[in-house]
Structure formats: C-alpha cells, structure tokens
Length: 305
Image (cartoon, rainbow, N blue to C red; front, side, top):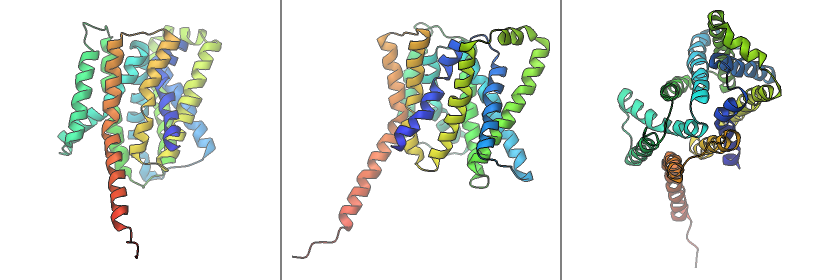
C-alpha cells in the first residue's frame, strides 16, 4: 500500500512539465519558482508550525538556495523548453550522476549491478537524445543537467543533517527560504525586463489559475508533505519503486495536454531508461526477501517425532 501512496507525489511531480506548458507557457521561470515555493512553504508552516534554532539557519539557507531556489527555477526552464516526456524520463538518470559523484568525491565505488544499470541508462539516453532523431533545446538540456546536480548536492547536504533537524522543519523552511530568494531575484529581473512579468499577470485566467493551484497545492504541498510522511514509514528502496510514476506522468500528460508523440522506438528507449533506473532496487529487494525466507527456514525448530 505504501508503494502505491509513494506513486502519488512522484506522479504529481512528473506532471510539472506538461501542466506548466499547458497553463503557464509564457511565465518567467523565476516567478513560477517563487510562486510554487513560498505559498507552499507558508501553508506547510500553518499546518505544522516549526521554528529552526539559530545554529540551523546557515544550513537551511544553503539548502533553500540549492534545493528550492535554483532547482525550481531550473525545473521551470526545462518545463518551458523541453518536451514533457523528455524532461520526465531524463530525470531518471539522477542515480547515474549520483553514482559518479560519490565515486569521484567520496571514493564509493558502485557495485556491479549499479554499474550495469548506469551503463544501460547512459546507452538508452545516448540513443534517445541523438540530435539526428530528435530536436531538443540545448538550454533545456543544460537546465536538466544542472537540476540533476542540484538534487545530488542537496541530497548530500541533507543527509549530513541526520536527525539534528526534524524533516518537516527542513522541508517547510527550505520552501520559505528558497521561495523568498526567488521572489527577490524575480523582482530584480522584473525591474529591467518588466514586459515579461506584466504580460504574465495580464494573462491570468481560469487556465493559468488552475495551473498555479495544481503546482502549489498538489505538486508541492501535497507532493512534498506526503513525501516526508512516507519517508518515515517506508524504506528508500520501496520509495524508489513508487518513483517510476514520475517519468510515466511526464509521458502521459505530455501526450494528453500537449499532444506530444514519439516513435515506438523512442518510447522503447524511454521504457528502457525507466526499467534500468529501478532494476537495482528491485533486484536487491528480491534478494533480501529470499535471504530472509531462507534464514527463517533454517531457524525453524525441528518437529519432534
């Protein structure tokens, strides 16, 4: 049941790209990032009030800048420049970059299964992103690589916190700090490129309002709130299985909302990347269950005759 619940935040996060293009196509990414983060953080603060200690502010400022301000703005650059399916599927390559990062920085060598999975993802991505078969905006691709870097660096910093700061406090104040930073940067940007912001405000209608509500309430408040709640009740491995809904959401919503379509060959490559991304966690989970069953069998007391 938890795995099914884990698919909910993964799915709503995967809809970001198509929903943004469909409802907010000409909005500045900085403004979208601020509107996604700051209201959501304030809502979460109302749901469960928290206040960091003085010593926690520096690390939360760093996390808010990387995990929220920079990451959210890059996500919206991707959403406005790349096909939804490509954005969703491309982000499943995060484990590959994380594996390489920890190998180079922390000297943590990947095991054979992780290495094979990473090689498969790279091979499928190389074929999928081939310029001869699909035309992609280089700005969006650079934003994707930068967003992946934000996830890896932000996750590494978050892990160093351990249990020092409650997860809800980290989440809430990341959003508030990151949203506040984005709002300041967006205001500076609007001071010399006001036409883009004025046009966005003038375009507010039922569709853009629905898009903002989706991004703020479902995508961020529900998505991140459920994410934190589930992390306390399930393993990271199980949560990985739920994450398969993210790229699937990108593909489905891109097809339904934007009319994106690809060849069967390209869909097969996308499927290959998705399967390869969850294969190590799936195989490890199966092996652990088999070992547990074998141990319980060996420990079973023998029946007296």
